[in-house]
Image (cartoon, rainbow, N blue to C red; front, top):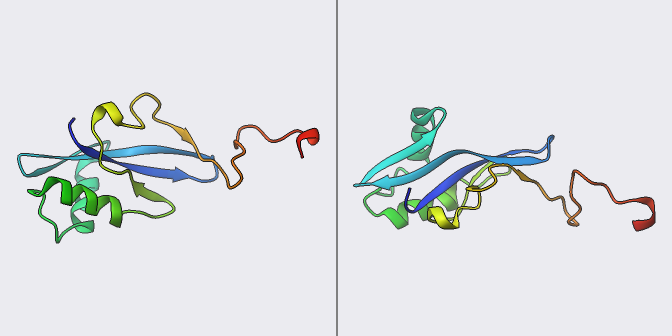
Length: 110
């Protein structure tokens, strides 16, 4: 996949985030790789209905800017080599202060 954005879901209670879809444009057509590609395609098209997918970079930039919430967001456009979810599809959410949710500070570190 060339230039694309990943749609990321935050699971706050579990302390993780993971991709639920990847969106790219091929020959002016929006392509969605996901478990439910048509459902995500509808969400994507509704979010950026005023931007033509024929303007690939503008379309992906608009999607990144507009689909940006605390539960669901999109990454900045990037290619496969720079994909932050290529090697590790699950990331741990870092709470404010930078402590890992999987490891609490010891009493001596407080």
